[in-house]
Image (spheres, rainbow, N blue to C red):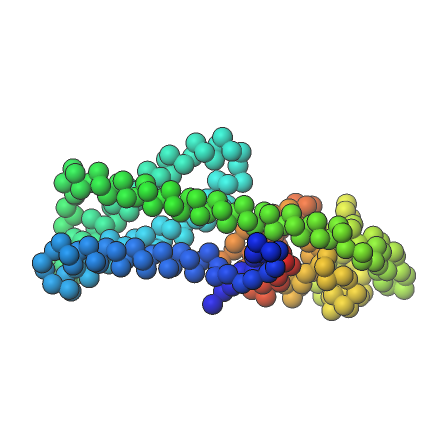
Length: 275
């Protein structure tokens, strides 16, 4: 199970299930509720009611994860007034997409490949109730997505504060061929592997060093840097924001305008650094 470290009321770290675990738990609960309601109100037997619950809840899976990704990448980074205004069309799009998926799925007979299927719209009162459910579910998804985004931003701010307070070494010697150059570690944005060299991205310039990534990782303070990928070391204070990239990875947007995608291990290191 994917666990996310958070602080409790005493300031101590404890592991909590990731948002995706909660999302699947919510979808499973919704399915159980639909099945229970159909079993209590429809006398058609378990199999028929199981199919009813399935075609009602199945479209929710891509909608929940798809709209969460849309909100995190395209809506929440915008100004508050714009993000708020977008909620109305997004809620309607969510509700109508759910409704359309339901009427398509329920029109599929067992031999639909040969006989085709018939799309029958809901009667008006049922349509109003379905759209109300869709808007309500969207509100839950939007609030959860906003909470996740705010928590990620707070974690990044906390990591920056920890880095600023750490009494780590202030300079590091870069080996460039036969010469050495001293640079402040706060000027380092990231260090990336480039064949036999490493590119040290500083504020306003890039230095090629013959020091390996493994050597850099051993010399740099763990409180200020993470191995985000086998080819990248990133200074925590140089991360302006992050967003999910799928499959357990994370996209890091850095203060110099560049972006890198972490490995799954890098994403775990980022979450652990939030402690």
